[in-house]
Length: 127
Image (cartoon, rainbow, N blue to C red; front, side, top):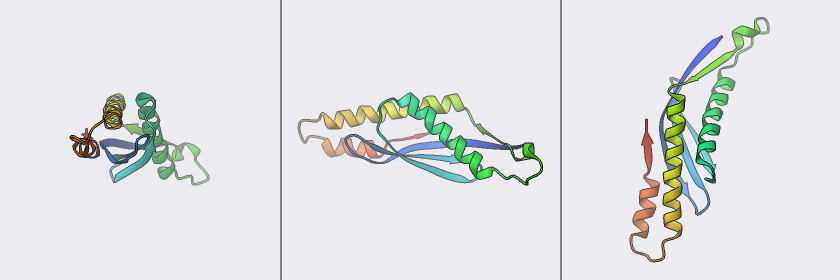
């Protein structure tokens, strides 16, 4: 059995439209990697859970090696460091991004419009 420790380091936004965001999740396994996904934020908690599951699946697939003889030796167990805290932090980050997008969509005048867009595009959460 192979153990892989994954540590999620940061979330950020690279692009957005009125209905979709491009999310970057930076993590280490111990190599630095990035997961990029386009999301329509409907249920931040469910998105957070699914994205963490996706990282786990990617790592399992990347580290799977079957020699044809010992199936248990090829099993890959991925441990996400502080998984519940990471899911909560990602969920809260997505909620705040969604609030900012709603604020931008509902802006009726040009005052501070570009500032709101810049605030959204520079949003990051480091863990």
